[in-house]
Image (cartoon, helix red, strand yellow):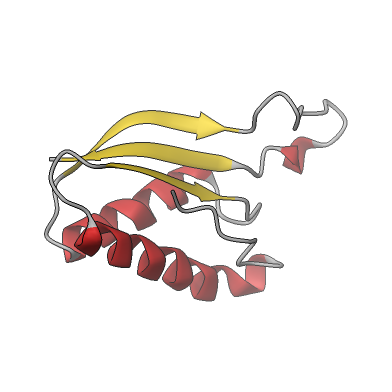
Amino acid sequence: MLDPPKFVPSREHVDRAARAYKDINLTSFKLLRPGSLLFTYSCSGAIDADLFQKIVASAAADAKVDARILKSLGASVDHPLLTAFSKGEYRKGLLLQIA
């Protein structure tokens, strides 16, 4: 399970944060055996779900690993989304299986 702290404090740091997310996922992919499951998360609001998925896919490709997305994940019920705060959907994750 990868659940790092927020890597990006603002939009100006997205490139640096994307590199950090890629690096930790790349390291994990290199350590996992076929059949393993990986839960990987981001709580950086400036990294949206689409970009996070692309980062993780890039890490898998660089590790020469085939990984299947079994489920896209979000915040649990203890982190409700508020209608008055559109940026509240900062928590995103993926459940992957190594092929």
